[in-house]
Image (cartoon, rainbow, N blue to C red; front, side, top):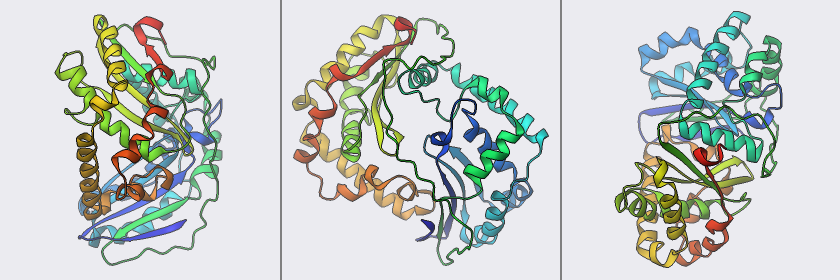
Length: 370
């Protein structure tokens, strides 16, 4: 895909270096290396950080299941002078073993933070158990035994060639003659009852239960399913929030979303935390909502969600320097191509196929201990 130059409508600019693969490149022995290497590779920009602060350039990176992204945003007149230096430093391995050892300690602290949060602990362990997926956070045992040579080798595989660069600028295109990666990642995740992998210990959280309901693996119709999850759970006026929180006071929050596990597969997650004594009522209420689409998935609700999405897309176009998801997420997952012509009858034609609660895996950490 090489370089994508996008015309900014404002004086704000963005520069994104995108590497596809991430967790998809990992195997037993190096689970978590993508995220650790994201930290380390960002250190290769240390010489530029004072300039970024001086020039008001926001800078960061993230590791997701399917990609790693380094991103920089700021005023066009200041960001454009740093683009060549950013790319040049990212693509040449310039790390020491001391840097590796220190960053490993930091990531292991982050690892502990994740597994000390009840819902994260629950979901991360379930992803291991059901999908053999350790996610960006990886596996503690592997992080502890990684070597500096592992990192060098992984840099060559994952970080020496980006898949594409996104440059959002009011007036200056970005050009480069670097080589881009051609690695492809097209696998479909497989759900099993239990992959038999190591699970992090479960801790008691003072009378609270984490609830995670996961649909069967979905391999098509992604934007329609995504739209339906918003109809069900986006905002305080959504059916799940109204029935579970506002009417019954069972929870503080409810999450309902489609998770992109790979570019060709995902699952619906409906999750929350509640007092132990509320678990059964929570699950009954979720089932009640999902089983009554005529009552809850109304045309009025459809119109609200559709207009909200249309407005969000308009905002994203105005602030396109910081909204480049359409150039990172596969087109088959995007709502924009279908939204204009989407009708209530069309989106609801997918409902019964994916939202039968009887087909969801239902997990409560205090009852089944994962």
